[in-house]
Image (cartoon, rainbow, N blue to C red):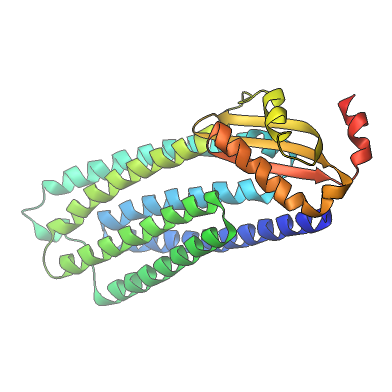
Length: 304
């Protein structure tokens, strides 16, 4: 029944929301610890890794905002609101300023390589134990999130927790480097700073590139073309309320409503899946939100 489809959709939405909320909360906790430890130990590599964690947190936040109200007309038609677009610009500006600051400090420290007391990070065993525990927590969180993304078949979740998994890998690399710093290899901290900053630059570009289609406001596909594609599925009486945004070939966001024949209500989930599959086959990567109406008798009224 249609009510079962709606219930299943709400259940998936709640599961996505819960996973993202847990992931965002733990990631922000680790961000705060990295900033605190990086400041206390004067470790540029850990400070750079905190920037990457900030990027990961932002990716999780965007995904959380997107799934919080996926069925609203405003969000379904535009993907992201002006809030998310503004936050993206603010983040890019902040990361640019932080990036320049860390590069400047790194260049300044290179001049002190002859004086290890000035350039070496102040790392001790308790700090390394804390970072080791954070590596395990971060790795466990990212693997759990990836598993949930595959189970729920959510591309947005999969992308965000791929970022989280990469963040865990970078933290493990920084942890290994700080172990080397404690052993007397002072230049490892600066070397890892360069590596992490390069990864941060690549990942902020990746996130903006991933989210860019959802921030584009023009109509991606003519509603008549989407309706023609949907009507190829048997059992559909009418297709209306069609909105599309994004870039064809990269990512599009499509919302539409269907009225199905009374005899086909029982197989409404299969009809919805076929419509989604046809749209993706014809127009490329897409996030499709399909709502099925209970009242087929309203089709003539909707056409007017």
